[in-house]
Structure formats: C-alpha cells, structure tokens
Length: 178
Image (cartoon, rainbow, N blue to C red):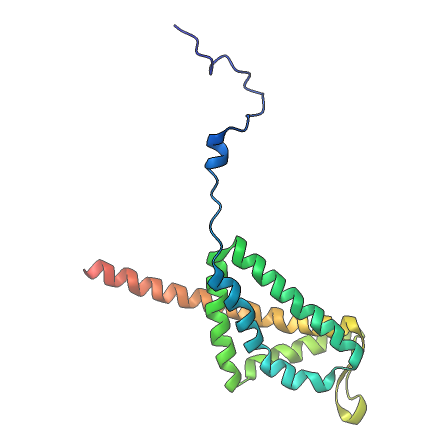
C-alpha cells in the first residue's frame, strides 16, 4: 500500500488557496439592464406617492424622504448585483405596480398604513395645517417613505414571483406537449 502526499496531509490544516479554488469562483457578470432598469422603475413608482404625499411633508421631512429614496436605489442596486434572479422578479412586479397607479388604490393603502404608523409613534400629526395630515420630522419623512416603499416592494415581489410561476408553468407545459 503506497502512501500518497495527499493522504499524509494533516486533515485539520486549513486548505491552501490554489488557482483551482480561485478559478472555481461562481461570480456572475453584472447585468447592466437590471442596474439601469431599477432606478427607472423606482422613479415610475414614485409618481402617486409623491403627488399625494408631498403636500403632507414639511420641509424638514423632505430630507428624510430623499434619504429613503436613496436607500431604495442603493438596496436595489445591491440586489441587482448579488441576487439577479430576485431582482428580475422585483422588476417585473414593479412594472405592474407602476402601471397600477392609473387606479392608485394600492399606493394609497400603502401610504395610509405608513402614515398611521408614523402618527402612532409621534412622527406625524393628523389634521395639521389647513386640515392636512403633516409629517413633522426628518425621521418621520424617512419612516413614511420607507414603509410605503417597503409595502409596495413586497407587493411587487409577490406579483413578480406570481408572474414567473405562471409563465414558467406555461412554458414547461408547452415543452411537455412538444
């Protein structure tokens, strides 16, 4: 029985980095389409929330909204880079959610829920100046924008996963018939 050099190695020794390990990397190439499409679809989804929300935000609350939108842009880019399959579903659902603004019930419900949460923790007040609800602080603007966007993002993901499930099922069924 011959002893090879591999069998004589210490089994507790950390593996050394060789070219085989480094070249075996599974890093995917970045899809520029996803990186460009994300901020465009995000901007399209901001139409109704900003149209209804801007009159409710005092000037200092607008700073928080800007930070929340920037958070969504950056988080979306990271998702596009590191989870492209997830981001494809998110973008597909975001397109549907953006189109739903012609009948903006989803956006209004999301904004109402977000504003109610902000009011409950003291970051907004109902019936402020001229009877309009008001977001009082930077954190209030950030919170309302983040919650509204979060609700819409969850809805977009659900729609995107549903679309992919339906279309994958149809394509699999048509392949089975062939």
